[in-house]
Image (cartoon, rainbow, N blue to C red; front, side):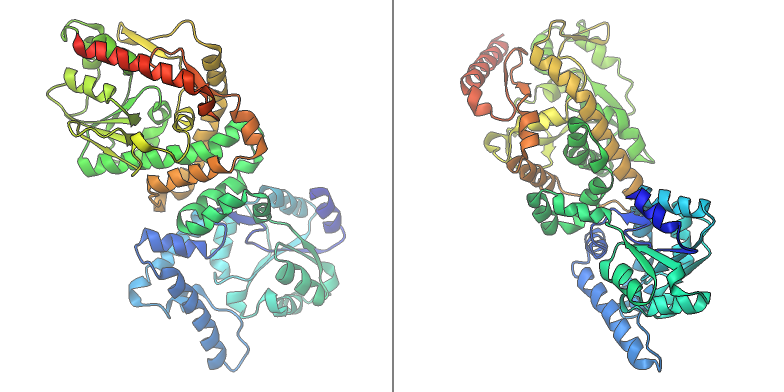
Length: 527
C-alpha cells in the first residue's frame, strides 16, 4: 500500500493529511470511549452522556446565535455547557489524548516521503481541538515540516460537509486538482474531497482490524468499554505485529493479567503501609523484574523468595535456627516489619505459613488471586472466585501465563535455590516457550504503563478473569493447536503432567497426583 500512495503523491504539488486514525492512532477504539474512561476514573457515572449532550448543544446553539453557518465548536465551548465542577476535566481529556495517541508508523513513512519530495504538506482535521494543540500533538509524535493546520473548530467549517475543503482551496489560491488528501473516513476524507475537486486516497485505518478480531472479545469490549477500550486498542496497534504465537499470547492475555495484578499489589502496599513485598517463586517471577519501575515514590523493598511446597516439607518441622532455609530467609535485607506475601493461589498456604514460622516478629499478610479459604491465615484475595469451586477456565492456564524461565526448585543451599537437575520433557518444553511468553508479557506491561501511568484506571481482577474466560471459551484453531502442546505439572513431586487444554483427559493421572500430595501432607503433619 505504501508504494501505491507514494506513486499518487508524486503527481501532486500539495499533500493533505487527516490526523486522527491516519497520522495518529489512538489506543482508544472509539473516541467516545475516553468519556467512559473519565467516568470511571473520576467516579462520574453519567459523564459520557453529559459530555456528548454538551457537544451537541454547543454546536446547535452556536449555529442559532451566529449570523454565519458555524459547523464546529472548540473544546472550551463544549465545556461551557457542562457543570462548573467538570471544567478541570478539559485538561484530563487533553491529557488522555496526549497519552494515547501515537504516530502511525505506516503513514509516518508516507509523510516523510512527501517531505523528501519537497511537497507542500498541509493538515486538515475535523476536531474540537484548535490548531495550536494539534500542532503540539503532531510535533510530539515526530511530525514536523507541515506548512499549515486547518482545524474545523478554528474555522467553523467541516470536512464532513465539504466546506472545509472549499476553505482550504480558497486559502491556498490553488486549483483543487493539485491537492491530494489522505484520510481514513470514507465520507469526510474521501467522498467530500472528491466532490470538491481534490484527489483523495482512502486509508484503511488500524481500527479496520477490529473486523477480524474475535467477536467474543469485541462483545466483551462493548460490555467494559472504559476498562478495555485502551487495552484492546493498544493490542490492535502493537500486538497484531507480533508474529510469534507465544509472544502474542503474552501481549494479548498474559500481560493484561500481569499488569493489573501488579496494580493490585501496589494498591495494597500503599493502603496497608507495607515495607517489604515477598514475590513467591516461580509464579511471581515477572513482578520481581519490573516492580520498581512501576511503583514511583515511597517504594517498598521487593524480594523474590524461593518457597514452595517442597521447601515447606523440608523445613516445616526442622530446627529453626540451624537449617538452610533459616539462614536464607534471615539473610534477606528487610526495609521494615510489614511484609506482604504475594502469590497466585493458595490451597494450603505453604509459603506464607513457613515464612511466618521463621519470621515470627514480623507483621505478615498474604495477597492472592484465589485461595482455598482458611480463617487462621491473614490474607486477602483479589477475586471473588474461590479455589474450591473455580470453574471459569483451567487454572493451570493462569500458572502457565505467570510462570518463570526457571526449573522447579527442590531445596535451598548456601542462600541460593537448588533447581531440579533432571526435568521432564514437558517442563523443558514449557521453559522454552516461556521465554517468548515472558517477552510478550513485559512488552504489554511496559507499553501500557508508558501510555497510561499518569492517569491509570484500576481494573478489578474479577473483570480480568472474565476477560481471560472469554478468551478461553472462544479459542481459535490456532490457539487450540498451540495450547494442546502444553502439559502442566500438577504435583509437588514434579513428575505428573496433564494437558493444559483438556485436563479431564488426564483425570486418572490428576487424581493419583492429588492423593499422593495429600499423603505427603498428612505425613508432614504427623511428624
